[in-house]
Amino acid sequence: MPKNTTASLPRFIELGEMKIGALPRILEKYDIKSKKIMLLCDENTLRIGGQVMLAALQAKDIDVHEQGVDNSDDPNVMRTAEKIETENPDLIIGFGGGRVLDVAKLAAGTKNKKYISIPTTLSNDGIASPVSVIKDSKNIPVSHITRAPFGVIIDLDIIRGAPKRHLMAGVGDLVSNLSAVFDAHLAHQKRSEEINVNALELAESGGHRLLNLENPTIDNTVFLQELAHGLVRSGFAMCIWGTSRPASGSEHKISHSIDHFCPRCNGLHGEQVGIAAIFTMALQENPSLHAARAFYDRIGFPCSLTHLGLSRDEFVTVVRNATKIRPERYTVLEDKRPTDKEISHIIDFLDF
Image (cartoon, rainbow, N blue to C red):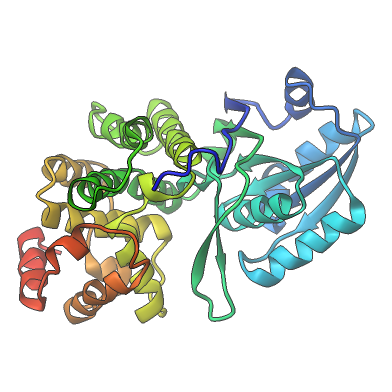
């Protein structure tokens, strides 16, 4: 069920060029009066923009403490939370990819601190959501609901320098919402689960806008703007709903099943859900399936099991076991319970 009071929306979104150096002006614009800031980053993000932010903030006599994050796991969250407790900053800024932002978001939420998200890539919809994905002691990603960022700053100059593969992963995560929204409606029809139509429309709008782009190119400014806006809308949808439901359905169950049963696979989250979504959309008989597959072909999205390092038999096992993931979340997998033969048939149909 939607829990519409669980997470508030970010107060502001800044999207454009030359945002990193203008950080002090942005803070002033939104009346954020911080004298002590903790900047969370890693070695790479410190180099590509972190030093610029440090210099800009320190020029305004703001005390900035840098804290490194080397993985999105429980030890990093605990270490960061302890540092926040010790230093007691007014504001937490996360500058990096998913690993840095997830740790920063959860640690800041744990200590009830204002947090600003500044992504260095657009690989998933966590940039504006209340969901933080942290690996447990078995190296399995676990989703945590926490506070959404107070604000999100997206510097397209930084984003353009991100690895193409990570941007493709963001595409997969956004397109996968078309599968997740279908599942939410299915659960409403079959199980009378409550839904929030506005949140679902928001979650799927970004995916549809991408599919309708003319001559899409992954590094084109218009494309990156649409991808950024879509991922932010997806995060907003989760804030409104209070859980990840608008952006996580059968395709995410399959991705988590890959994490559990094929931990040797090294696919990015967005790649896994983006590929799984094509399978689940086929199972759903989703009207957006063919448009999504054609779009993947046009931009060169790696839509194959071999890209994930999975054999056909392994994927069949993954799908068969996916219903063990979040069994309370009803999806097309629970509705149709596909047999091994039916799964194989869809694999052949999709030419995976």
